[in-house]
Image (cartoon, rainbow, N blue to C red):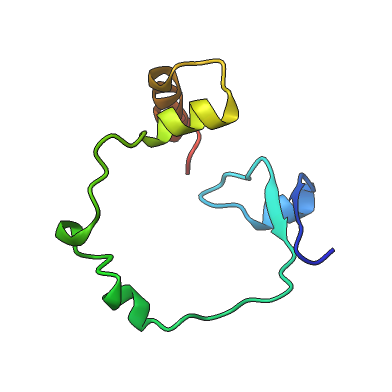
Length: 93
Protein backbone atom coordinates (compact mmCIF):
# COMPACT_ATOMS: atom_id res chain seq x y z
CA UNK A 1 0.00 0.00 0.00
CA UNK A 2 2.97 2.36 -0.04
CA UNK A 3 2.52 5.56 -1.96
CA UNK A 4 -1.26 5.53 -1.56
CA UNK A 5 -3.80 7.62 0.31
CA UNK A 6 -7.21 6.60 1.62
CA UNK A 7 -10.13 8.55 3.00
CA UNK A 8 -11.17 6.94 6.25
CA UNK A 9 -14.46 7.38 8.10
CA UNK A 10 -13.62 5.13 11.06
CA UNK A 11 -15.30 6.67 14.12
CA UNK A 12 -12.62 5.61 16.59
CA UNK A 13 -9.83 7.10 14.48
CA UNK A 14 -11.73 10.32 13.79
CA UNK A 15 -12.51 10.71 17.49
CA UNK A 16 -8.78 10.77 18.27
CA UNK A 17 -8.50 13.75 15.90
CA UNK A 18 -11.12 15.84 17.74
CA UNK A 19 -10.27 19.55 17.96
CA UNK A 20 -12.28 21.94 20.14
CA UNK A 21 -14.98 19.31 20.56
CA UNK A 22 -15.46 18.72 16.83
CA UNK A 23 -14.86 15.35 15.22
CA UNK A 24 -13.70 15.52 11.58
CA UNK A 25 -16.01 13.97 8.97
CA UNK A 26 -13.14 11.92 7.57
CA UNK A 27 -9.39 11.40 7.90
CA UNK A 28 -6.87 11.13 5.11
CA UNK A 29 -4.45 8.27 5.74
CA UNK A 30 -1.20 8.50 3.81
CA UNK A 31 1.24 5.66 3.24
CA UNK A 32 4.70 7.13 2.74
CA UNK A 33 7.32 5.01 1.07
CA UNK A 34 10.12 7.58 1.23
CA UNK A 35 10.46 11.11 2.53
CA UNK A 36 13.35 13.41 1.71
CA UNK A 37 14.55 16.47 3.56
CA UNK A 38 15.70 19.40 1.47
CA UNK A 39 18.29 21.91 2.46
CA UNK A 40 16.52 24.64 4.47
CA UNK A 41 18.74 27.17 2.72
CA UNK A 42 16.43 26.82 -0.31
CA UNK A 43 13.84 28.90 1.56
CA UNK A 44 16.30 31.76 1.82
CA UNK A 45 17.62 31.39 -1.74
CA UNK A 46 14.11 31.26 -3.21
CA UNK A 47 13.24 34.62 -1.65
CA UNK A 48 9.94 33.04 -0.63
CA UNK A 49 9.42 35.62 2.11
CA UNK A 50 10.14 38.60 -0.15
CA UNK A 51 6.96 39.47 -2.10
CA UNK A 52 8.85 42.01 -4.19
CA UNK A 53 10.93 39.13 -5.62
CA UNK A 54 7.91 37.02 -6.61
CA UNK A 55 7.15 36.62 -10.33
CA UNK A 56 4.35 38.65 -11.87
CA UNK A 57 1.10 36.68 -11.76
CA UNK A 58 -0.99 39.12 -13.78
CA UNK A 59 -3.32 37.20 -16.06
CA UNK A 60 -3.17 33.94 -14.12
CA UNK A 61 -6.38 32.38 -12.81
CA UNK A 62 -7.15 32.73 -9.13
CA UNK A 63 -7.75 29.57 -7.08
CA UNK A 64 -11.54 29.59 -7.60
CA UNK A 65 -11.21 30.02 -11.36
CA UNK A 66 -8.64 27.22 -11.55
CA UNK A 67 -10.72 24.84 -9.43
CA UNK A 68 -13.91 25.44 -11.41
CA UNK A 69 -12.09 24.88 -14.68
CA UNK A 70 -9.95 21.89 -13.67
CA UNK A 71 -12.68 20.06 -11.74
CA UNK A 72 -15.35 21.04 -14.28
CA UNK A 73 -17.55 22.26 -11.44
CA UNK A 74 -21.13 23.26 -12.15
CA UNK A 75 -20.75 26.71 -10.56
CA UNK A 76 -19.06 30.00 -11.23
CA UNK A 77 -15.80 30.99 -9.55
CA UNK A 78 -17.76 33.58 -7.57
CA UNK A 79 -20.20 30.93 -6.34
CA UNK A 80 -17.32 28.69 -5.32
CA UNK A 81 -15.64 31.53 -3.41
CA UNK A 82 -18.90 32.31 -1.57
CA UNK A 83 -19.40 28.61 -0.76
CA UNK A 84 -15.86 28.22 0.60
CA UNK A 85 -16.17 31.36 2.72
CA UNK A 86 -19.48 30.16 4.19
CA UNK A 87 -18.07 26.69 4.92
CA UNK A 88 -15.02 28.26 6.56
CA UNK A 89 -17.23 30.19 8.94
CA UNK A 90 -19.69 27.40 9.75
CA UNK A 91 -17.64 24.21 9.59
CA UNK A 92 -14.03 24.92 10.50
CA UNK A 93 -12.87 24.63 14.07
